[in-house]
Length: 358
Image (cartoon, rainbow, N blue to C red; front, top):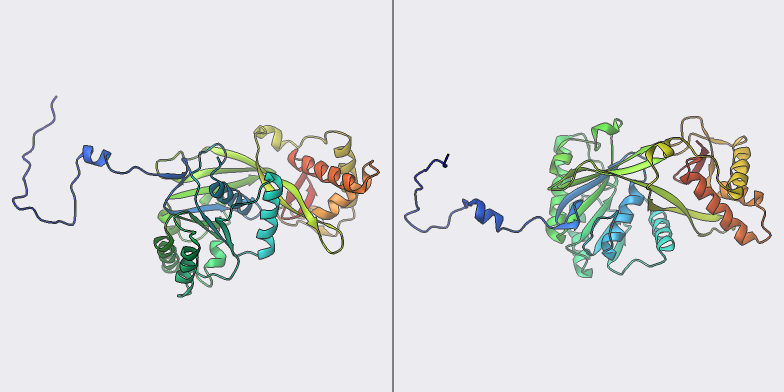
């Protein structure tokens, strides 16, 4: 059956009109969506990376931003290199340690077009958005990715649950994007019910061009696309946080942070904690278990309520004292490796510098 014929009225006089009426052929010739991270993040617009506290979302955001700065694949997705501005609003020491851990793990420095902002920044302070934009433009950090970590810190006293306040925050983010180009990526918390997505008014999610959601079940961490334009929603990408020793403090105790690693361990094997593997892991596990019997901290970070916890540095110390090695430096390295292995196997829980038995 042939398509019905309609009489097309031709414009008698060539005038400049506000709207264009495109045919399907003309529409097909227009520029297609361009990706910064293939099938994950577009080159321009507004996106979010969300997750509950202790899920590893800030570590994942840094890992993503570093991949963009280097132009290297991220979880198997092609990346087009671009400048990165990381606005770290939750502590200068924290971001410095995370970057150090990343560079130690990858054995390479981040490029000069990866820049970090640690000064106070508030979206609703009139001068802050143009001031940040001018700083980035002067350094050539434009048309890439600008990460705001976190939205809560950048929101100042705004009420995230208010449609009016959230509208003002979205407008400020839109203004920042218009000034620096590229993609604005906010790091944000999920609400009390993580299944309901990003915390705050629903207009935030509606305004997003893309959203990455991070979840954690026991010691299983995953990210997936919660929203994508022309991308693939819902596919899970498991990852883990490996402990990295980045130096020593003034007392000679280790300073540690974490780095993101893809985790292809089958889901069922993660849910059931594997027993310690190898002599060093068994010795470290026994030493840490004994130390936890006299622990003074409970339910720290994302540990279950009432669960005894040790600071990570102290746990490594207990493990090192139990290992059979004459050289102190090598003993500590083996202890760190054993603790990392125990966390990866699900024998120990770890979050935000705390260790507990699973």
